[in-house]
Length: 201
Image (tube, rainbow, N blue to C red; front, side, top):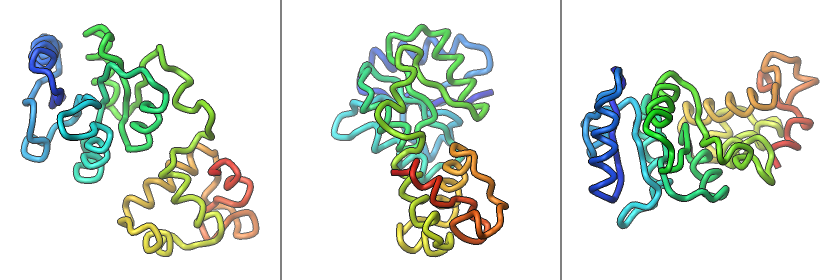
């Protein structure tokens, strides 16, 4: 059973989503607030929240609840919002006009470890940029210059786990090989030499 938390600033939207998702097999709507207390598997999160930016909220959830996956559900079809949400750690981005069936399918895919982007926005997540998110590129640049992961942690004021996750994601996207010899990499075991750094800029 996938435990879902619905966070939206409109009562009608929250109630409607809760009713629709409750009818879906394998999905349980745990509530509409209190992420830490409820421990959801997936948070369905709007961008426009009263007194808060949903993308900033998503980044906080990803940091505090690493096992929780965030699916942005919004009326905003702007590429900039999509890219910001993915850079913040959201696992998916859907428009509110998406059908209930597709929303439920996206929840299942994200809960299983996948990623989802609304079909109407395919390609926008990388428009005008390289394959890396800003945070992945930020972690990769010093590593590509030969810095040890401990130095990256100190420079970026992040936890070891967060830096490792960002480097692993970046290396995977660039198809680097972490076990290459030092002559081909940016440092011992990093596998991110100068030719990979170009994609981070």
